Length: 300
Image 1 (cartoon, one colour):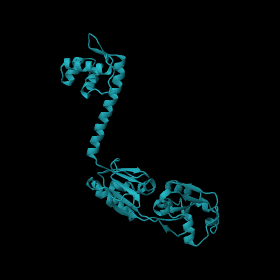
Image 2: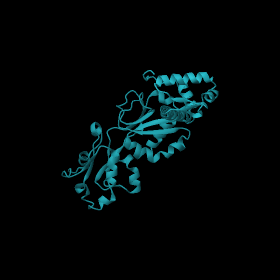
Image 3: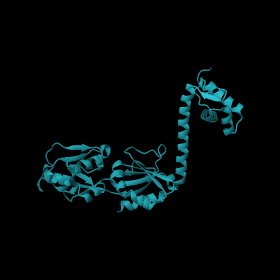
Image 4: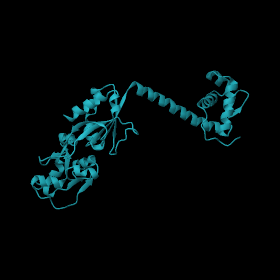
């Protein structure tokens, strides 16, 4: 037989093999597929030649799979199952439109998730898929319809809606505050730092906060530094140190009493958060509802 071809057989040929294997008869397979037995037999021969191996042994009562045929049937069955699943998912997509929203991870987990149930009440007929990422979103290479971004400079060509300008203020866990007197906590407690890389210049740090407060920055001491806001918040909740927390992102922790405001002085971030989207996204079902919902959420 010829050397195995890298080309895939036609789907109709593979289907004939699958039905014949399941029924154990070329004639029965032909009847089910509305083909002649000769046509099914020819397809099987073509498939065996293309694969370079016999798939059936002919018997008086029909056909029986060879070991190679049994192995090939396993792959064919799995492939058809995947195709059937794909059809079901496509029907679901057609029946229930979906919007895909990309967001910075901390905003997704600390701001959107606590309010996500409102989306179903706000727009019950549209599925919402939420993706957390720090990377620049390529709207041509991802399923993204919208992105929540820090500042508007990263997406100059997209339509945008301003959401909110956040601010930071010093917070700590009740357990940490119990270890220091009220007047010494800012001077003696460990500090938690955030490293935002290039975006760090837009986030007020401890040095700028102490300057705004008119206090000397405390002497350097062992501290924690994180590149993810959510990690820094969790560290503060665990009692690791004082955090300059973003108000919007620590609201749940403040409401539960997991974090306590140490001083009322707050400093604004240098850039607001925006919702951005390409023009094509406005034609998606539910897009106006999403824009309005996030706008209302930002104004709460």
